[in-house]
Image (cartoon, rainbow, N blue to C red; front, side, top):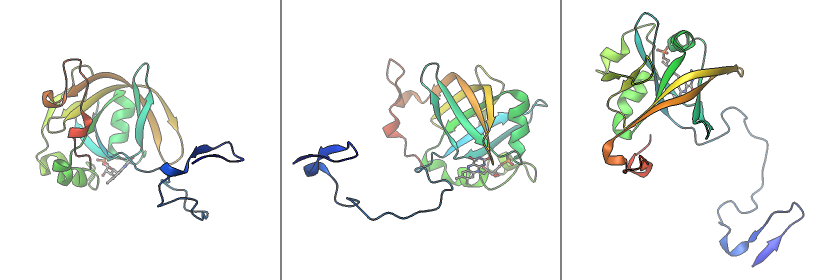
Length: 185
Ligand SMILES: Cc1cc2nc3c(=O)[nH]c(=O)nc-3n(C[C@H](O)[C@H](O)[C@H](O)COP(=O)(O)O)c2cc1C
């Protein structure tokens, strides 16, 4: 049955899912209220050549043309100054098969230990930016920082996409990536 209400919302009741139909709402916690949060690994290199990787959930696409992504980094992270000074980073999309490494890299700081060696993380050099890419992640997005905004707890680094590496088995002749084959964590 077609309907339209006073807010201008219209629809078809036949297609409305029952689960949350007209549920009662209350004020809830505001922190990280936008879900689901992507879970990626951001790799970077300091001016002295040191490599690092951290888990990042505060990230997303932020421009279609030109392609841009943003990552939010807390200034106390060891990686923060590397990205700030080098002006580049790589966003690595992570499959569940890499969960153990993801958890470790997101809970240990390079300021305390060589976590990349501890997890035998395999790196190769970026094509366009001076930052490492994670060899065992299916997609690696090389970015140059074009701007940043301190939003509060995080500084959002806006990265212009310079190169995208994708597993050949996921990619068609036009370069389109079949993301459905990645079992995202
Ligand atoms: C699921 C998950 C999401 C995270 N998201 C972010 C994030 O968006 N920004 C951030 O700065 N840290 C985030 N972290 C925390 C860092 O990955 C963590 O503090 C890491 O140890 C920092 O490494 P570093 O000090 O070597 O740079 C996240 C951790 C996890 C497990």
